[in-house]
Length: 181
Image (tube, one colour):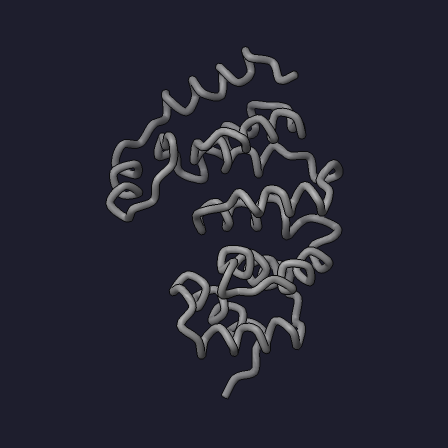
């Protein structure tokens, strides 16, 4: 059981550092959460340093539909306790690319099973699960995973009517590792 005082302290820090301009910008872009405080990434990094990493705490934070809680959870989950199954469970909860980016950068790209995870994610249909494919390409780019499978998929995405965020990830991957015409 997560200490309620720890959660209260985290939530108090969110309130203390609230940035209404960021919240307004998110709302204007149609990015909705149950609650958002508008904290920048560097602020979340500062908060993460104030608390002991814990899988239980990270899972509790992840379960909240709060932008900053999900982002902080990616910084507090101990890498040596993360399983590929837990990673896939979290990926299913991702609705926005900013959460996907934080998850990839802070956790998934550092996991010992990153290449295996990429393979599992690429087995899914990018038309049905574009955020999952986005995550796979972001991890691949981050860990410098140069694979024919990623190149082929990136080409396919760029030539399709995929969402712009997915096309952008495919272009990033191709710029780093793909075949250049």
